[in-house]
Image (tube, rainbow, N blue to C red; front, top):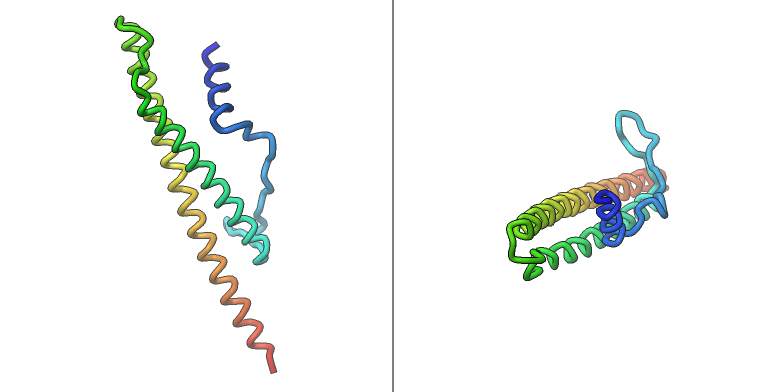
Length: 130
């Protein structure tokens, strides 16, 4: 079954994404999140770990692109298979690039929020010092 083979290939590449579901954060209004500094640091660490995995996957995908010969034979059907495989690998790489960029930008925003939180907390503690 094609879907089964594709699913097995994806699982071999990325593992079972449902093995360890992550914690859901939220609770603010208007799409805002509220976390204490320790939680924010932990979330940043989780996103950095995810970015590492995405980058590792990108390396694996790039190695597929440079596979010398995808076609199993010299006939037209084999050539079509190789062309379709190449298109699929290119699409997979674009998706991986998109995920990597998203994770990088999200980490950047989380770190900016962390910096603002620390500055705000420091300012508030200075207010109450005698």
